[in-house]
Length: 409
Image (cartoon, rainbow, N blue to C red):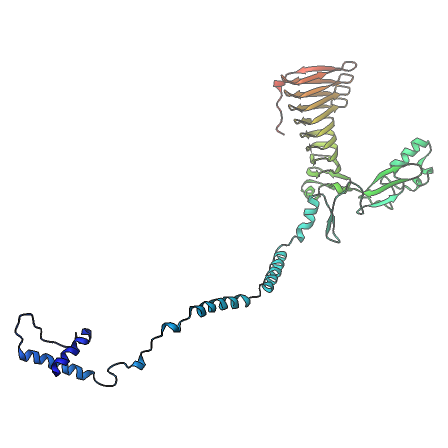
């Protein structure tokens, strides 16, 4: 009976417990079991069971604790998630953080931009008025500003006009007897300023000391600032080579003894004196006049140009209005009139000669005045040409358009 209980207990044990340590005798169905082999199996089992006896052989109930289903409350778990999220949000003061971040970013942005060195250039570039003392820029104006000293008094030209009108020496006119030189009251206008008369009468005259009077030569002209509208009036002298500019809306007189050139900006009023070998470029919308010993007036589209020539040429672009004339003696000029240009050419007297080269679509007119002066018109088919001779031996001559080549302007 003892052996049967041991055998049944063996069945209740996991076969994994002894699979690797017991070598039992194996029997097949229908086979007669040997008593010694069966007893040997029981003996092995008994020995194995005895080895498992003791305090540490099996785990007790105290060693195993399993939670019951009622110990996990999903409601409490979910509330923990909600409470944790709320605590996380309330721990961040976004108002304080936003203001601090904004202030830091704003300061960094401002400090990263340094336009101090550019302020004056930007101001002058848009024809503004730059005040060096306050480092400020104000809107330009064609009228005298606080940048110029304004006086009540007579100018020399005004006094001479009064002398002619009244028929008495201007030194006898109160106020005119104080004049000291060609720039008006020298004690009030310095040598580098021009007195601009704005009113002239026997009762009063008003002028201001404004404008710029500067001279340059060659590369030194590069350092002379362009004539600005707020300069009111500029008088530049180019000694030798060099180039100057009269900006938008300025009033500019340029004296060019030898090979000097200058440009006249949009809506500027420019006068060239003794242009000699250089080029006067009149940009769109400008008003240009010049006395030309030699050189070129380049009259761009939309501009109006007038030239008195001893020699040289006038290039009149599409949409420009050009007046060219020669004076006396052997003076001459060649006018190149593009399609769409309006050109008027004249020759005064002596053997003065004006040549007009008129492209198809241009409008050319004019004629000589007297003496042996002549106007030659070389008109392409499609050009409108008209010439009226003057007195004496003056004449209009027809030229061959194919004999002339337009310059590259």
